[in-house]
Length: 305
Length: 274
Image (cartoon, rainbow over all chains, first blue to last red; front, side, top):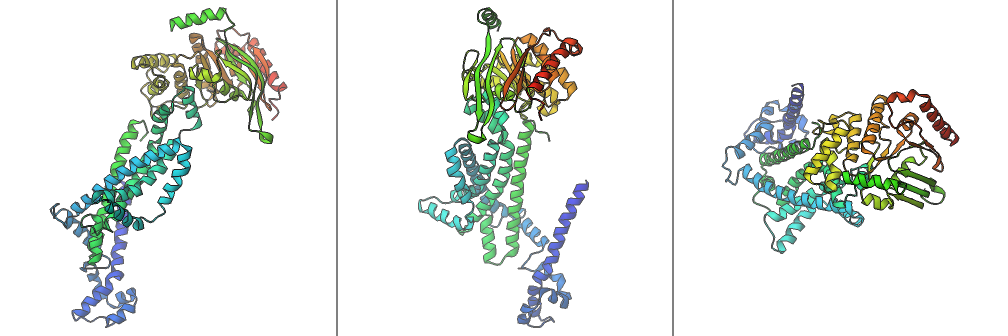
């Protein structure tokens, strides 16, 4: 109960800062509109105001402050504007509508999950290879690390162009970009996890004359589970980012990335922010879902909770 | 089970039933200036049914010798036979159960499932697994704890479970590397007493590493006093204590006399130099 109060206090603080930030961010737009409407504004011309500091403008034009939270195309939309937009595009729109955030979220989600699946399987397979083969350890691991140093925003268009030229388009290219981001944490976590059994536990298996397969299934894999779930949580969030980035270069018509892109083309900041929040909520739900699976599975594996 | 023990007892009469035979055994770790002579010219016979303790200060090679028997280390010279085979063959034949200093139970398995681990690996049938788990749990007085997870048990109970795990399959040789080293003295006394009973009931050969003199004297039929740098056997003391040993045997003059000999041996072997 006390922690709930603390959490709500922090949230209220963040929202408060956000509302305050709207004042200097939006004041120029509000004053320009007021001038066009024939109101008295200090200083008088848009040119002068452009060079003035935002805080100075706020001080000189107190009457305009109340309007900064309801601008139609604000630089920084107020929290309630984003909330209303989210409400309108999810609950009030039919999911089949091209303006429904649920529809766009679903498009991105399907690419995210497919990419996450590919990335996880690939990541675990690579980790198993790396742990069992010295050659793979030395040859694959450096490439896996290098792969993550290339900005995905630079790589995504190339992946899409290359795949398009061999006739692959639609969901798969986006999923591959998502997989590209999500396999890495899985590899790193699983390598660490599969190597987590100590000498004594490995010696014990040796005294039973256990085969490599038995060591893997009975010792290494169960030992790696906590590491795997930590990685999966990072992986699925990265996968969502990958799916969104994958929607940008195609000028995609559907998906959260497409909403972001369309919003920025038309200066619809409220739409951009609501798409961002849509993505954040989606990520939170996915991570929470993984957390739930983790708790159930590790609980059955006897971990104290 | 019945059959094999009969066969074993007949072989008892034929050959001297040597389970472990070390001849001029040497083990050097590393090479050049950095090399460590862990074991030097070890000669030792362990007979079937013996309870042999290895005692000495750290660095005397007692654990290393046990690990050589288990084929977890490879000697660099001399010969070592376990059940008439090389240690590697003996390991592949699952000739021994090994108990480590830490219980090392898998936290994601219940006690019963932990004990089943070697049985699963060795391909015992489900019914046989359940039967053996019940047997060894009873043997270490943990019946009723099979469904518990390791963290729900005390340290002493966990160590007993790990002994049960080593007893679950048919190995006549039990190798124990300071199994009670991390436990307090009260628990340790109790486990020592239980271990003796268990040894009497199962007729196994036990190799036991310790650095406690009372523990070594109380448990053993044979005490191997070792000394460090290079690791070697200083003296082998045959215990004259009867096989039946209540805890208060430790107050008898005979016990104190043997303990005194062990202490003298350790001192002469520079066991107290540091």
